Length: 446
Image 1 (cartoon, rainbow, N blue to C red):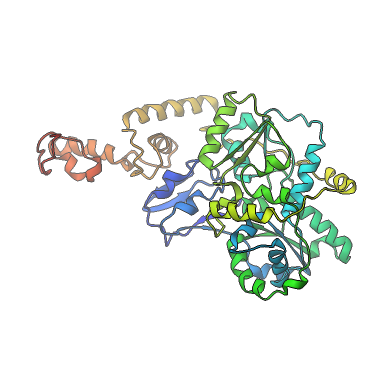
Image 2: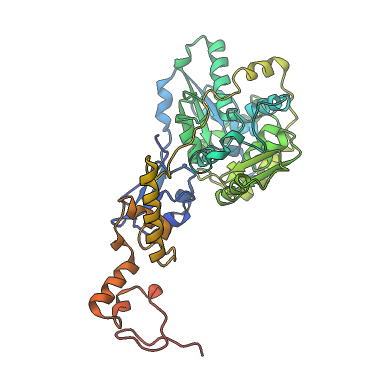
């Protein structure tokens, strides 16, 4: 699987900030540089946000790709609208997209309204309760690698971006007479997981999007064209408030009119919630909306604006949008393409060995080594935790000598107990009540 998160080795300084923030422990630092374990990465973009040296980068589409197609359609995520100061009309943004090279626009928000309406009229599809939203690709992949018992709880429907792309291509082909492969459909997304999902959707057998642009790139491209628009002759294209609300946590549940729902944002909060669902501690919730980013898609790593400010702006824009009621013919069209064509599958990322006996032997070896480690999660070994380091050693990805405390033990044996700590950085030295060899005196507790 191709990921949209990548490392720039030249910028990486091996500072270990990323390994301590990665929710799936997918990053290691070896030989002074960070590396990503691709089978554990969920493209949540957390590392991109925390890296102080901008060594983690996102791989997304460039504008020249528009030249490959005769007709290009933009599918913007509603988070785009919240990035602009003093914006009072979403149509300004949508018309701006027509000015920078797109021939048409089909809003993800419009598809979200169709999706919510169809789900509201469904009687049931066999999904286990509580039902988990599939709208966040990072969450779906997290469940695939870490919570396989919850796969049956994921609602088997495609995302609004995917639905919008399918409908946009279909309607453009009918309107223009062009073959579908001459029509380019491009999403404008707030996060790296949406970029990855554009190329490798979890619920579809093939991709329905030809590329994905970052909101921050489109934002910069739109600033000047939007100023030059004739505000009295804007083409009306904006969807209703219900679809726009999907940009922030809780908006999907509200548009679906679910009563017993929980909306969770932030990847660490999502993990805790999934652990509770796995343990059977959430029986009263019918629907769980999970978003990996803070405040939902408004907190994506490819946005420009602070997510809390963006939410305030988006709610202000929603007050001027009328409610939209999908037509019966639209509902029938969507029902035919709504369901997954491929079910998300368990990815045995954390499997130690395909052979159960060897896997148990490795597990015992990991536990034995972990008991000998200090349990400080210091990151000096290049792994996010002592448990992860022990696994790396047993799996052949690291050496015991990568642990600074293991080195101390060896030096104590070679140099004598009184001076071995002098070779360690100050935070890792043992607390003493008096002088110790070459070390300076330590303050007592007076």
